[in-house]
Length: 90
Image (cartoon, rainbow, N blue to C red):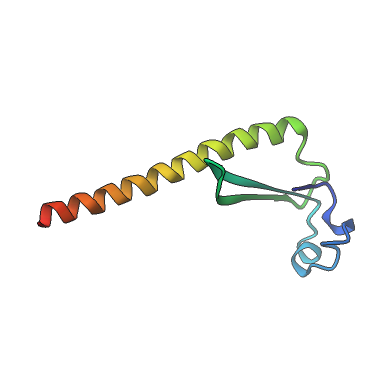
């Protein structure tokens, strides 16, 4: 979701946070790993409308892919450490 002026969007015009913080631009991108949602990147600007151009959004999409992979790797590593500790105890 990319909104260049969330205060004028009917879905968010009455949102207390959007109004109170005077959000001018908003971006939400999914963090996907193998088509599974692992998180959401939320960015906002309180100073610039249309802050998230097509070029910036494409770079952010690439970063989201890398973040999702890194998160999955961290989960796998934690599981591996847990399994290794159990084997060591046994």
